[in-house]
Structure formats: structure tokens, C-alpha cells
Amino acid sequence: MRPSATFLFCLLMAAPLAAQSPRTPGLVANPAGHAYGPSVACDADLSAMVWFDSAAGGFGLQCATADGRGVAWGPAVPVDDGTTPTAWKNVYDSSCAVAGGNVYVAWSDPRLGIGLGDRDVWFQRSTNGGASFQPTDLLIDKGLPPGLCDVKELRMAVDAGVPSDPNDDLIAILMMVENDFTPPPWDEELYLNY
Image (cartoon, rainbow, N blue to C red; front, side, top):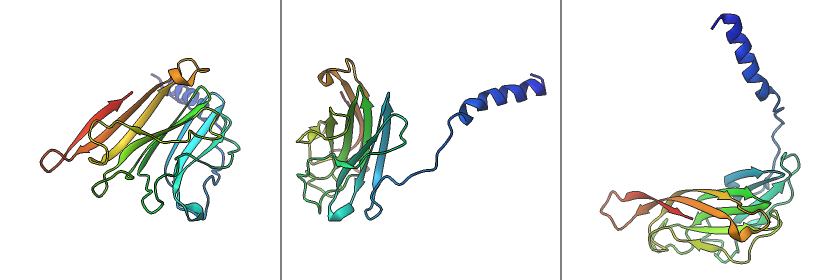
């Protein structure tokens, strides 16, 4: 390829990046809290982000939503059902997905942990665009007994299927779990729940 053709090719490839018009970042979590473990997802005209926050003296998983452009974010709403005492509440990993106007959140926390750091995977779903979530967190089968064997990482993907029916969604959660039933060093195994 001639040098002038190479320059023209690079210019054409860079044009879509310049069209993105990056914006100045904006504060979305409470500056008085300690926000961590964030996840963000977008689909069509809905964007959602989740994070663990210790604002206002409590602990919990929060969600904020915006239109698909992510220009103006709404107020944070609680995701988890709040059944875990705040001294125990500690979200280590979260994964957010948006599909068909619904917001899906999976995370790990040690509320059932028998040993130190034994986290399980929990799930929540909003069928009203992230305005509120279901009243009870759902414990996800991680392939090993609840309260034992630590979930180190998780990832989630969602296919909405028929967007008007949230009960036909395909939700896949991939988890890396430390198997405490093997001799040290403990195996880290992958489990898929869908």
C-alpha cells in the first residue's frame, strides 16, 4: 500500500472515533460514600449502572439509569433487598445487563458465608427500566454448596427473547468458584448457570 493510501485508510478508520464526541465525565455516585464494584450496560434507549455504596451510613447495591445516550442520570435506587445486616454487607463483584427495557444485576456477597470470604451469587431484576427491583434477592446456584466455596469473579449476559415478556429472557451467569473441597491450593473452577 502506498504511503498516501495508508494515510487515507487511517483517516477513514479514525473518523468514526471522532464522531463519538466524548463528553466530560460527571459524578454519578454519592461523593460522601465509598463507591466501588461498578458495572454499566446499555441497550436501545436505556443505560444502567450499578455499584456498591456506603453512603448515608448504610451499605448496599445501587442502580442509576439514563436514556441510551447516558447524558442525564436519574437518582440511585436500591437493588438488593436489604436483608443482610450492614456490618456484613460487602459486594465484591457485580455485573449489570440491560435488555428489552429490563435491568438485570448479579453480584457476590458473603451473607451466607460460613468461612471468611465465602461469597455466593445473588440476582435481581427490574421490569420497569430500573425504577425499582424485586422484593427478594434470588440466590444463584454456583455449583457448590451455598455459604461455602468463594465466588472469585462473575460475568452475566442476557438475551431478552420477546421484549414484552421478561419471563422468557435467557440469563447466563459465568462464575469462577474456589473449590474448598479439594486439597490446597484450592481449585478455581468455572460454573455456568442459565
